[in-house]
Length: 201
Image (cartoon, rainbow, N blue to C red; front, side, top):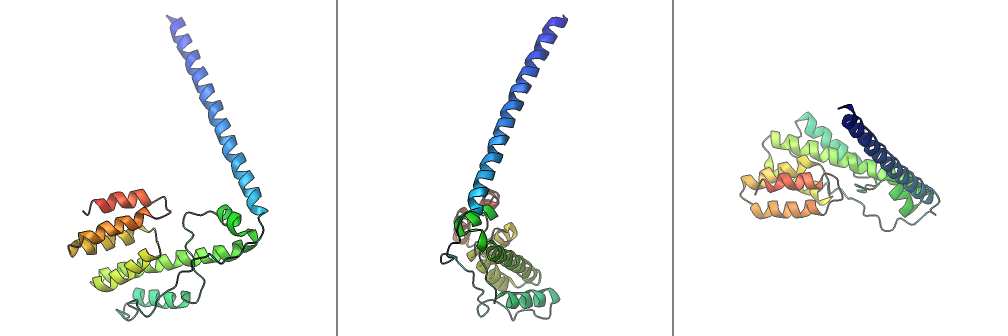
């Protein structure tokens, strides 16, 4: 009775060994591809930045005068005004290697700062819009959220709260348009956001 068990054990060991070797080869290839790509990126010549799509902050059209007696709102508006003079670019979905391959490593510090500024912008807009909703200012909040969406933000809360406003107003077509906007995002969150937004229809 021990022999069939032993034979099965040997088969399992062989399968495990085969799968382990296959995984090791796959991992080795992934790492080699990464190092090859990183090496190519580090040797890329400095490229012009003419094609960068800078994000502009339209202070004159955003609700910067609403609920300024609230400390959180006031801080958001102040931070936004400071950020308006900075260079802002949305690089969501792009790695440092991607940026170096496209623009050269010499441009990387500037591009990283642009990306950091965009991350800060989206954080401000999300906090600002959410607080406006808490203060029962849906029109002002929608203004903030729609601007964030126009910059191609990938913060799920922004889309859900926008959908909440549209649903409350029976503007189903705008929810569909919202889903179409998400479909164009270069974000790992895209499918999750779309699935949730479909629940609003």
